[in-house]
Length: 560
Figure 1 (cartoon, rainbow, N blue to C red):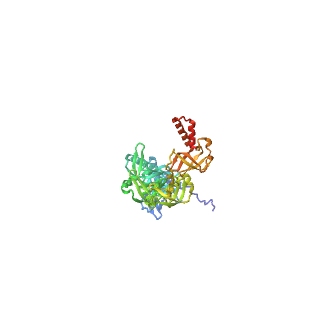
Figure 2 (figure 1 turned 30 degrees about the horizontal axis):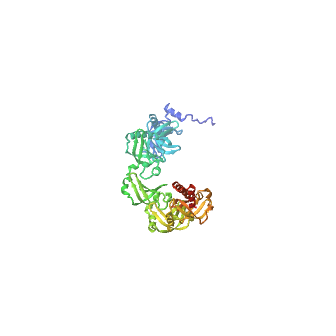
Figure 3 (figure 1 turned 90 degrees about the vertical axis):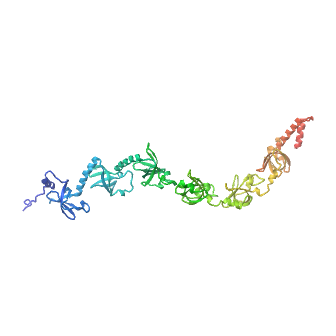
């Protein structure tokens, strides 16, 4: 027998054709129909959908621990025929999905919100279960503001807005942000209507700047200025606040015209300055912590919200012209004395040096005015010598207190830095922290005695010591003086310093007296001029027939 005689008939009728044969034009493949459970196995539910054969559905499609029994009616999706025997492939999941798509399309058209559960994360966003239909939630649509951790939002049922649906591609895009914005707008309107100064609200830190933080009050933002965060000093809001933090705030100002809201946190606490006057007494010593250091001093916190200023001048008895940062450091615990309290201006003046003995007072107690001390020259300046009296204290010798018989500028040249000298304490000012010393006070004041009887305008006899090109050095009553070349004679021809030899005695007029610097000014020329004036006066008053030449001659003889 050949193959042509016993040819196997080909299966020319498709499953679709067989289905059409039974239902005519009403092909239910791809449709959702009602079926009846006729048998249950551990893995499948056998369902009769009114066709020639039954279909089976995996038990897992009914969820965990499904409560099913024979005779229950369920909606199923007719997927396809599985084999030539006509077994039908049914799906409960696809039936639920079809049902869900149908409901979701109605919500999309009506703008109604739908409930869903975020259950997974994918590239660019998240997956949401909308009662069987899987939707995509873009990352930008999850909230009004960026969220670092969405874990608390996952696994819970919450409303979403459908943005787009494409059944052919099976795409659904939803938004949680749209729902929040609508809710936010409603809450904003309600909040604005009820908002008033003094209201206490809960808010979320939305943004932090150098000058404060913006707080989301639920649809409207308010500014929490850095000075209204806490009663204590805050350098930057980030020291206390963080983005996303929930805080309780009070409305301290509300402008209805521009809807600007000023908020405060410290206003919810008692003002610590209200009790300062009775709590911190002038002269008392307290412990505090350095919170801030500036060029002019350091701020010390006595308690939360209460700070006082230690001015740089009140930090050390002996360390002057030093930056406060070299005496104390931030966060250092220090002992301070209250110098002044002004609760109205919210100011407390503090002192650190006052908590230790005053070395100036202690030194003067041991070395009263008139005491002779020994010290080393630490510095030489244009106005005097600084002498080290101890490790912490210096005294000063003014130029005028170095020598009796020399000017300060001349006398200071006799000393060098590091030289050990003796001096006498001549004045003390503990408040100003000054000790005045003198070297010349160690010896008798011979200069004062020499100045007795020396008055400006009087004529004195001076002994020539030596001369130079510019004048002549002389001595008067033990005092050294210098007669300039121009003052040696009224006659220019006679103004030659070489005309004056050591030991010569000349008469001169005193033109100036400077006891402080031990100086006198002399002039022979001035004396000659005075003599001529006197001669003229005598001539004018003369009646004995003398000529002017006779009078002048007599005057010259006297001067000679």
